[in-house]
Image 1 (tube, rainbow, N blue to C red):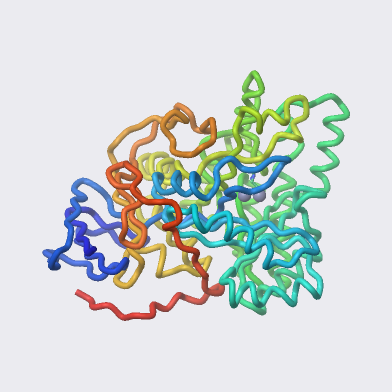
Image 2 (cartoon, helix red, strand yellow):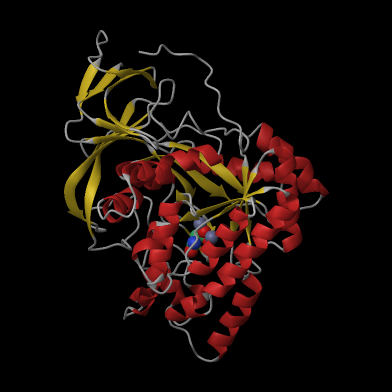
Length: 471
Ligand code: URP
Ligand code: ZN
Ligand code: ZN
């Protein structure tokens, strides 16, 4: 059914203006004033911003990790995402050495196909490079539409790859138009420091942070950036937490290397002291890389403002406190790493960023949607409001106040890392391809309505197949 959104303020990464949006066949058909279309439903966005749907390039739904499986799957995870204003996620498809890559991709399709309520794509983990893997990768890019690869530089003996693998992945990506993503921490040294801490009887959650100092994130970030320069390739550093890593990204970019950086809400508003909460509550705040000393938050905010970091991912990777985080009682290295963030990503950036004057509205859209869509081969189908783009739209009330809580979130996980935090600004209604997923803060979509997105190669804009009339 045709829809016209009226009375809202449209915000993209470059513009802010009053306009009406006509939606037809799931796409933005016209943008203008006094729009009319026979039979169109009129949606009143008075007092609200009209943003392009959020693109979250970093989720882990239904993922085996840390001896368990993430609590939120593609159903509850994408429902939470939708309530938070995200209409596209790109999730990490894990692979096993020696197993055909298509098997892993098939597994991820089975996890997501009948569950997602928003659109989604996959990144593919590369754990090893050999002739067999190299022979499979062109098909992953060209037929599966998976155009980004993830290399872990940490999680020794589990997910970690060596430098040869990273370099050869970068070299392959250069030739074939993929974007390489890294989890940048020095896994070997972390492994040593972890064993030493445990041998010394230091088992509490805080030792998770103390055995992963920021120098080890900075070192790995710099190493990956230099290998990218050497291969003349392209790199996206996920979950940047600290000054050491920001400096390395900024230095690489000054040299003209194609290096991009993402941070996440938790690193902007939480800090290392949360890991010291009593009664093992610190386990709720165990991420890798870990939360840092508070002074790093200013560095991250400045980096978002001045463009040294370009995206805000969530790194959604939720585990219940009861029964999952608790696996690490008495041994911090057994606490599953990660937390629930996908639902609050936009609210936190809006409230702490825009409302507090750290970033402007256009930067908010760029950081939560447009840049990720561009980097990951989805733009301009996703990531903007423009004629011909998918009508992925968030009607956002900038003045409503709420308190974040597990009592009210829509994820399945049993706690919220931002419990008690007051935020201003919240999505009211959210559409994917012109259909409401959330309407007036109620879920209206059915599981399975989200579509898998085959993505374009790095630096190749998505050309819209049909031309649509311009008002
Ligand atoms: O602690 C984290 N970040 N968990 C998710 C897996 C990863 O490293 O991104
Ligand atoms: Zn990671
Ligand atoms: Zn992650």
